[in-house]
Image (cartoon, rainbow, N blue to C red; front, top):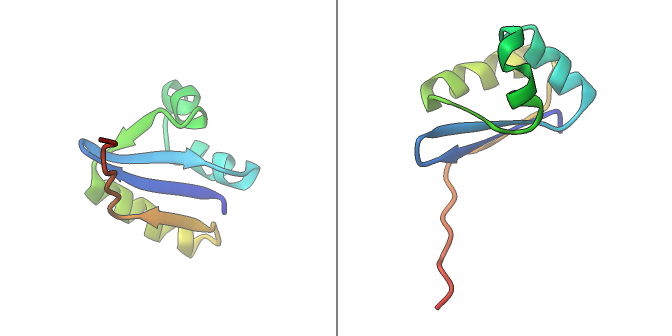
Length: 75
């Protein structure tokens, strides 16, 4: 897996998981965002994440897109 995308409350979190993933992301985002992206701290609108996932997949990047995730609070 090169890039993981997971839905959050305010958008989709980007997490690069390989050198290929981070290099591909660097060609699509300005340098001021690279540190946040490389640390998995970037969230983008879900619509943009869907386009990013399609573009990355077409470029041969393996993308894991978790479209929804719920967590049950412990009692």
